[in-house]
Structures are given as C-alpha cells and as structure tokens.
Image (tube, rainbow, N blue to C red; front, side):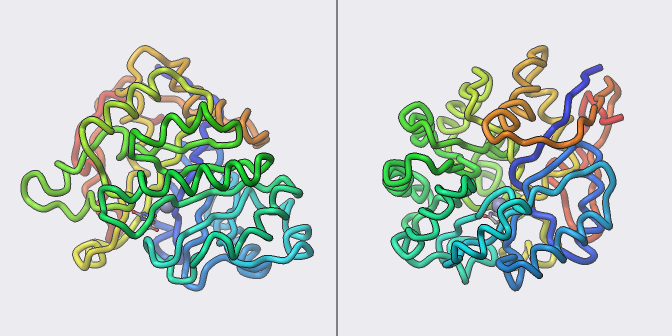
Length: 322
Ligand code: DOR
Ligand code: ZN
C-alpha cells in the first residue's frame, strides 16, 4: 500500500454545472486541494464570479479545498487587495491561445502594472506559456517571455504551467522565481498518441504533446525530484461531442494517482514531493491534512464519465485508490 499525505493538484479544470458534478468526485477522492482554473464563459475575473464559483465547488465536494485562480485582466490594486486572501493566484492566458482564452492578454506590457501589484501583494502568477507560432515550437518560443518577466519582476512567483518542452527545464535553476507544473499526459505520452496511428482527438491538448526526447527529459527531471517541479494535472474535460469538434483538453482526473504510482515505482519519497510537498513548500499552501491510500489491487479506468471520455479509458492499473 502507498499512503500519500495531502496530495495537491496544482492545475485543474472543473467547469460548471453538470460537468463539474460529474468530474469533481474524482479529484476530491484523490486530492486534498487543487488550484482551480478560471477559463469559464464568462471568465472568473471579478469578486461575484469568484465567490459563486468557489461556492459551487464547495457545495459539490467534501474534504477538498479549491484554491481559486482569477483570470488575468487589468485589475486595480484595490480589487486585488480585497481578493488577495480568497485566491491562490492569477492565470495569464495569451489571447486566443487555448480553450476560452478569447479575453486573454493581447500584450504582456499591458499587464505590467498588474504584475507589479501582484509582486507587491505576493500573489503568484500562473502562465499558459505559448506563442501563436508553429504548433510544436510554441512553448520554446515563449521561453524569452518567461525570462523577461522573471527578470523584470524578481519577487513575483511565476508558474510555467503544464510544460511539455525540454528546453524550458533549465529556466528552473536559472531564475529563483520560476516554478513549473507537469501534467500526467506530458509526463507519459507523446504526439504519437495523437497522430501516430489512427487520429486520436482525445489526446489533443494545448500545449500539444511533444517528442519522445521531450518526454524523456521531463521524466528524468521529475524522477530526480526537482523541488520546483510540481504536479498539475490540467485535467480538462470536454464532452465527446466537443472533442470531435476539435476541443483541446485531456480529462485525466480519474486515473492520476494509479498512473503516477506505476510511474514512480518504489520511489514513494519522490512521488510524495511531486504530488504535495514541493507545492506546499514553494507556495506556503496550508490546507487540512488528508491521507490518500493506494492499494495494490487491479483496477480498470472507466470508459466514460457522463459524456466525457477519460485518459487511459479501459486501461488496467496495478493500484487502486481506496
Ligand atoms: O488542452 C487544454 N485544455 N489546454 C488548455 O490550456 C485549456 C484546457 C481547457 O480548458 O480545455
Ligand atoms: Zn489548463
């Protein structure tokens, strides 16, 4: 048996309404807390929307702490001072780069005043780091933007979300204020899963899955237990109907801990740090303690959750969440 102390998912999409009701139980069962993404329609970018969304999550869960993220816009100091204690951070989406990011940031310079305020108030910045260049180069091309904001705001804690490109890894040792989350899918899959055989829209996500070389580099970084690397699932449910229309996102929530248990094997210590301690220590996250147990019992991932097809649907795992 593996006992995990207070697992935290540093990047989670729960949506609203029926989808939230369908997907939230999987995260609640495996995690003590999660950082909740704000790319709803309309985005979570004001007090009312933030409070109502948090309430909806709390009404549909138990022993689970939603750490709320606001959607980046040009906030005033008054607004952020008032909301500081109700949020984890603010998520920056470049305009139009991914699902529901139409209202995202058109030019990073526009939000420099907000970054200044965040830095002062000690509010972390989460970033979807992609340019609108060639699809496989988008994260690499964003590297200079990460470097610029890391240098211009040395006190601002910046999370490079869902990194899938090996080139970004060296930034973690170069800049004290840069951190990274890594998803289950960028850790275990490559572009071959999307387009190497029959086209598989269920593994289409942003940033797109990359090369075996990228995956191997990310795997060895995670296995080394780098302190600034944290688990963030980016579990992003879409109905099958919307996936077939081309929506980006992989719904990984049902299989996270069983899949990670197989990935880490005997190295429970590194598993524990990746899934919890690194996040808690890097960001002073204080949530009620929750033990999650994985028992050694064959378990099969569901084929369908509501109208959503999960990652690794139907796959058999050696561990089951108790
Ligand atoms: O694949 C993705 N899906 N990437 C994102 O950045 C957004 C997410 C979503 O909300 O569906
Ligand atoms: Zn996301």
